[in-house]
Length: 147
Image (cartoon, rainbow, N blue to C red; front, side):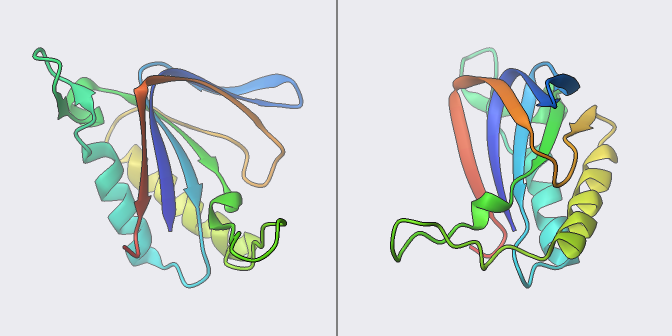
């Protein structure tokens, strides 16, 4: 399982031109579920994301977590994180999990994140979406449950 996280001052997702979800200061999570991912991968990523110390303290040092600042989360399903581009110029998505299983693990992830008590917004799994964000820093980190 891969989570590409971006520290944001705000982010929103649009579906068919209509606002579907938006957050203020917090973390945009692009979540990619791969074949073989399990509940253990969900548990690892859902523990790691809200506790990563990527927000600045009063000394301008990244020392605070989303929990510390009462940040918000926008979680978007992103099967393209599983792209394999080694051969040729057309990405292969063979490593991406089948949609029904991927949706199940995606929903488990969002449920666990909600248990932090912080605001969690989502896109619509499998929908064509437009995501707008203001990356703060910029800070972008890839978390891979297998590495």
